[in-house]
Length: 311
Image (cartoon, rainbow, N blue to C red):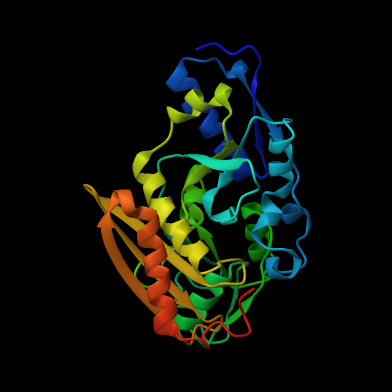
C-alpha cells in the first residue's frame, strides 16, 4: 500500500499518549509494510491537560481531553486521533467514529503506595489522591476511614505529587504503566472483584472521520475484534447510564467463543451504596447487552439513587 502524503496522527502530548500513538503507528507500519515516514505524529494540547486545579466535573468532563483533537480531525488538520478509550465521551461529534480498538492491555488498577504497600495496609486517615470518581467511590467503599483528595495531571505529574508527600498513595491504570515500561512503580495490582475497572480501561482507540475512503482500509487491518466487541458493550452500558466524569461507573466485558459477558457496577460517590449486574449473550448483541445491564442496575438502584450527583 502506498501513501501520497503522510498520515497525520493527532494525540495529547503526555508520555503515555505519545506511547499510544507510537503503538498505532507501529501496527499500521507492520500491517501495510509502510515506513515510519508514511506517518506524522502531531501533538495537540487539550483543555484537560491545561486545567489541573479543579476536578473534571467542574470544568466540562471527559470531553476536555478530546475536544481540540476532534476539532483538528473534523477540519482535516489531522487524519486520525489516538485516545485512551476510557477518556472518550459516549457521544461523539457528528461525522466522527471510533473505528479501531487495539488489543486490550491489563484492565486492572495499580495502587502506588508511599507510606504503605497495599490499600489494606494504609493506616486510618491516610490520604489517597485520585482524579477518578470511580476510584474515589471504590476506595471509600473498601476503606471508609481513608481521606480521598483530587489528584489531577498525567502519570508523571501524579507520581511527582506523591513523591512530594501530597498523598500517601495514588491509583493508576496498570495498562498505562506497562505501556511506558513503568509497571514496577505499582506496589499492588488490585483485584478485579474488589476494584472493577472503568469502561474502556486498558484499550487504545482510534477516532476517524466517517466515510474517509483513504483511511478505511488502512485502519481496518489493525482493529482487534474481541476488544472492539467488549468496548461496544461497555460504552453502551455507560451511555445508557448517561455516564460522565461525575458518575462512579465500573464495567468490564469478556468474550469466550461467541458469548460476551458484561459485569457492570454503579456506586454513590461516597461508596456507601453499590449495585452490580452481570449479563451474557451472543457477541452480535454486544450493544444491546450493555444497554440491558444498565437498565437492570438503574431499576435495582431506584429513582433516588442518582439524585444530586449525576449530570
